[in-house]
Length: 339
Image (cartoon, rainbow, N blue to C red; front, side):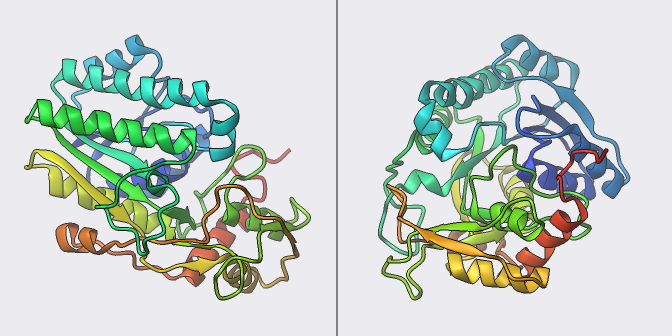
């Protein structure tokens, strides 16, 4: 089928685009390159041996979004495009609501005009907020605690209302946990702009010499080593989850919700140790006070995805770190071309 991938030049989007191409699909990538690189798309084409129809544009531009659907015979959409930094969302909530929610509304309007009603939405475990029930099942009430998470929650509500009002729609909401790792080739991976917001890319930049040390926020949590525990999932497992969801929903209608995670938690110190082993070097770190709103632990109940999609995460934390290090050590400055 022909699949439109919004945000397809980004971290998860580029790996999913590669998976789609390898699975025999045609892909149109629509991306404004605000936090991504067209070089990622070029490398995806090289790895797949197949071209991508790349179009630079912004979902906030309704006319440009309409044009993509007018010019391309699209069958389904995988929607990654959006701002995703929790801290920035607290500082700039209007920017996040406008970009994420309004952008999605424009996308849905364009899809409706074109008669395209198959959508996989990139949601997040942040919609669960500070829930203490572990592992986190899809049945939990949503209670996001920051503007970024609330944009995901609001979009989920919009999509649920849409499919209930119009039974022709088939919509999948994928709530995933902490994506890490890279394609095994080391050619594509995570390339955050500025200071990384997440643990593993920060650790990787310390390992490659771009930063001095890792700051560990909190060592007094009620966990085995006192540091926060999260569910880390390999980005290629995550990409496979999107393909499985697309196959499942193709001849169905309604709204489907699945967690994508390993179902296992790893502490901050366990991640640093695993990455040190992958990189073959010691990674310095220091402790700092807890950050407001950080939970002690968060990991998925991913059993529903196994039952309905036949999908489960396959790669270990060691493999995640090895692949992430292969990418970072081969591309110390990310996709930026060296002078």
